Length: 530
Image (cartoon, rainbow, N blue to C red):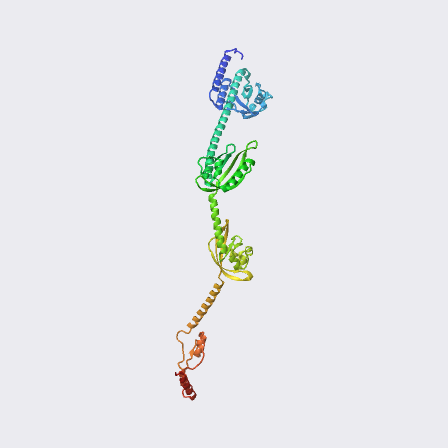
């Protein structure tokens, strides 16, 4: 640095040194990048009094404007926030690393943009921001009058160095903050993962407890079996570890050889298994176990562990046994029932099953009946049959009277009791059929007799009341005013019939004086005496 030759120049140097010292001190405190840029703009304007100051940071072959220069610049300048390296004066400095001083940019061919010219600027200086021998940005200053910024090159270079240091420190702080944010996010993520893992373990343990489902792992080197809490609850053992011999001793003797076979085969060949066996738990309870297992190999392919699951299926086995017993009872009731019984699919109307009584009733063997549908035996229409099955399936109605068609075209009156049941998880209708043909005939005969009696009663009622009868000839007058003999009138108004004869009193009156009549009576009297 050249020595000052005049007092004004000396004073200027003092101000420059004071500004440099102040900026240097500001670098040592924890200022934000924007705050430091504001301080740079203020110091440059207070010492150099330019009309325009711009600070760019170099990133990915672009120059990015730093801070807010509009608060300190005296001219209106349509500043581009981004410049490409090699573009205009600042871009050339970023490309070459050499400072540029131009007294008249309007005549300088290196100034390729019009923003500075349109703002009325004349003199321009651009210096590289260098930190650790690397260009980190560009400082640009300009004035509307003809000035020689090159005289203050030393001050501008020191200022540029401080700015480069500030930008580098800002980058370092940014990287530190990014690292801190990433670390904080990673720690938060790890804590969340650990929390989720704890919850997952709790949920898994609860799920195993609910399903009576345990997991185990057999170390082939030690013969030790480690497992989940529920695994050892199933075994009735305390803790979460046991040995293979101890576990094998709990298996029922009839199943022990089969279990040992799969374990030994898994150790030798790695073949997986899926079996069921019975155990006598340490608490004395017999249990049914559904077990799965497979081998685990190391990087060399050697089998080092066996892992698997065990589920307590005792309740399921008991339910299956109970269901089997119920099915046997149902099958016995179905097959041995004297009433005809059919199982019908409500969706299709197909006859799924028929008992021997139904085969005898319809005159078809079981194979033939199970190939038929209810429309083949019912004389109703398809729509009427579907309605009846819908009502039965929804339990709105369970009793019906139908006419069923048996073999050889025989039609029988039947009453049907039907209700929904489930067989192997499939919904069906169970129908019990009773032949009521004889009862129907009896009922029809009874109805006919009742009708006849009612008609007779109605006719007899027509003879009740006052009848106009002649006291001499005993004729009866009808509704039309005609006189009819009494026997004719009664025959017309009832089912009574008349046969004619003469009573003894009338015989005596008519023939009492005749000899033949007197002799006939005498003979009759003699016969009647003892």
